[in-house]
Amino acid sequence: MIKQYAIIFMVTYIGEIISKLIDFPIPGPVIGMLILFILLERKLISLDLIEKGATTILLNLAIFFIPPGVAIISALDMLHGNILKIVVTMILTTIITLVTTGLTVQYLINRREK
Image 1 (cartoon, rainbow, N blue to C red):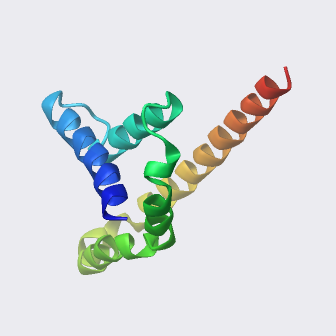
Image 2: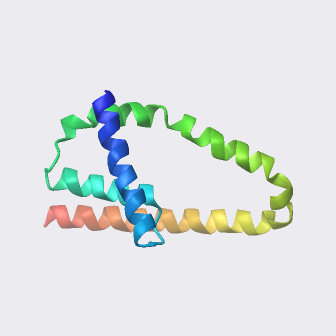
């Protein structure tokens, strides 16, 4: 399991390095997960190398949200005047995410059927 975690976190760290080096607006972990996806898609690493580790991380994903949640609670006084903006932003981004996901899935289904 440690080897699997090491592979996942190493790829994520490489994404972080790339993000810092080229001053890219996409967060490093996102770049790392894209790299991991490409490695898996191109079969440069097999799914067996990371599957159990990734599953364990996903099952315990809530733990990763505790520090940001505590930070938000400690910064509530700063957020107080911007609650409406935050709620509107959350609603709009949720709608955008749902529409984008739906269109992507529909495109992939149509592509598979052809």
